[in-house]
Length: 133
Image 1 (cartoon, rainbow, N blue to C red):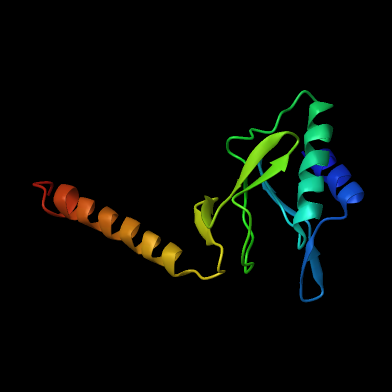
Image 2 (image 1 turned 90 degrees about the horizontal axis):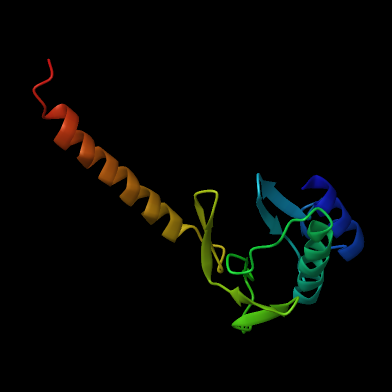
């Protein structure tokens, strides 16, 4: 994956800046986020990733591939990449964190609180109220 992403970044010159740092991608195992400040550059980076991956017999799962524009108004509903429609979404979950188009975190915090509350309720039903001594 590192070789594929390195070739993608070298060729597409994608990335986004945060302070003095430039971030081009996030990857964990077989999940990859390509970062770009310009949609055209992002679609070119996705095209290059597709080409580089095919050299190793790998394919992008286009049905799972999403685009999210953070802080951008009036985005298209889908974007065409290598002949595939890629959905532009308002939010998605990546590595258990819900990322929202507006950059806010309230939805993710509410989701995590609900998960925690359900776990505590399950403990109350099954452990703390049991006959285990």
